[in-house]
Image (cartoon, rainbow, N blue to C red):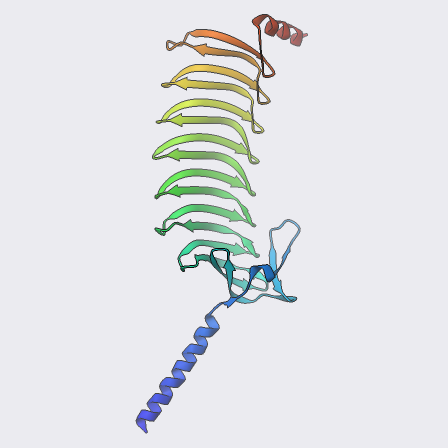
Length: 255
């Protein structure tokens, strides 16, 4: 009688645990079958199926894996995960109001972060960093989904490029380095070269030119190693002209 009671009790406990575990398992649902409703500025996305808002934990198949989402009143909320078919976690991110909001991290096969991004209201906003073998190769600043601010790239432990962006376009100085030494320094306005452009050789200035709206416009100099001028060239709106033609243009432009 005691053994029978023990077996029945164990069976009851097992069934209870199994029911609890099943209740916690996410429901699998195909993304393409869902209705996605966005608000006017796409800062909110509501998910529904057959006219009903999703509610609970869901497993959604992806092209090469699956995602796990916690959905409340149709809105993906809180921490979310993306996995490969083999079950390796390849991304962890956060949601608010159904869209990305907060830190997003992608992981490589060694479970190291290879991409780290910040989001706000569904758009990149903040610092974005890319890594190779644990070393940073790119660091950029974003605002409302567009590159805005300083952007840096690295080769090994050394800086390769340094650029300034505004509204996803280069604006201001853009520098290129090789072996820790500056190679070129250009000025940009609305993603077009505008202003002084300088080239360096072994850390010394070797050439400079002036640009206007992406075209050479002005005097271009080539320099000797001692810094003295080797020769000059003259440009008008991208076309090379003689010194006389350039000076004539300057005189007309002053009137």
